[in-house]
Image (cartoon, rainbow, N blue to C red; front, side):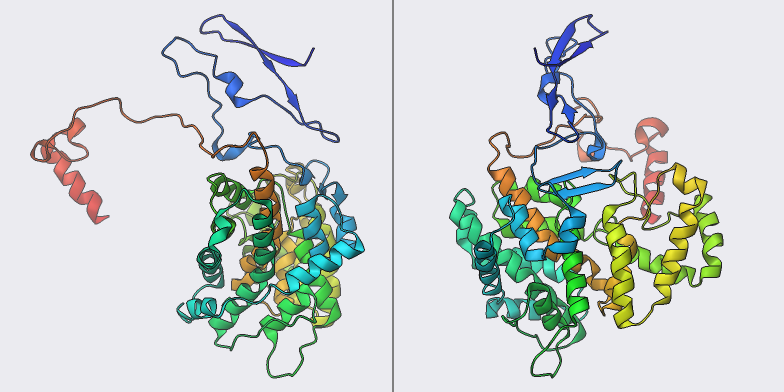
Length: 457
């Protein structure tokens, strides 16, 4: 007999048996279906019991086989492979293939996959004209979101999302063209001519070429920096049902084409609480200024004056495994670019915080944003590019999640319920009979005065 949850409704005395669903090893997630609560009613007119869960703190919106996170133990795996192994041995394109196809590619599959991506990096010349229309100081992320959405008009067949071959073509195009659009957005902002893709370079080497090439006949990226960017892209490729992934699935559930879905996901990533978090870490370190000020800054954070950026995570209640990798990577990168006082400052901040009972007891450990901004800055990326650098690798994860959602027979168009807290039914009041907002409780004249005051605030 399957496991069940017994619920007794004290309003009616009725007893309900609700089946418990389980995920697979290693965590064995347990859940009940939200719709199994609907039969629990106080009366025939009752809609049925809902689960109220703002921000999805404890609600599973889907089943997924892509990314596994155990926040208590600090574990992150893509399709079962530990992130530490992928960061050490894999490349971004191989990891993207894994996310999308479920298995690591053979040598022949990886060669063909790489060839396809490489030969789709060019963008239509009309897209360049579209990007030229942005103001000279437009934010690169705003340009990226808009331009990716515009791709929808260049590939109208993409609307046929139920055709596997059509989906595959758009997936290749999006992964290939995101670095090109990102680099063009940067060069537009700084007033440089666009640098075209170089098919002889790797995925990340080519991106560095399009970003930083000047007058040299052939751009050759530093292999340490090229590998560092590859590792950063691997670490950011997917992260379960976060805000932007949820946006990708929600918009995709309406069967919108993948270009506007990715644009929606990138728009969610644009927010400072998501893709802009590493920028906030960098600004915090710059504000601290010197190692001598770290104890004072930590004391202020403990008093609740502000949050210590880069510490703690919605999911991880242990050291973020990506942060461990990036801490070592930051040291290697700065050996090439020159030692940064910000890295020394970050390591001192981490050392003191992890010895402080306040942070340890609250399980506030460094997350992926703590070191990534330092690495990006050392490599020459301006702060405005940080969320763009997040969006490039996350495209593979978004598309893997989108593809999984489309092929899941249980998924339908996303449509959350709400708990209505507004007024009951009331009759329309003609305009000349209406008082101000406070008239109902304080009289018409007082209401009108209050309305004027409110308007001038």
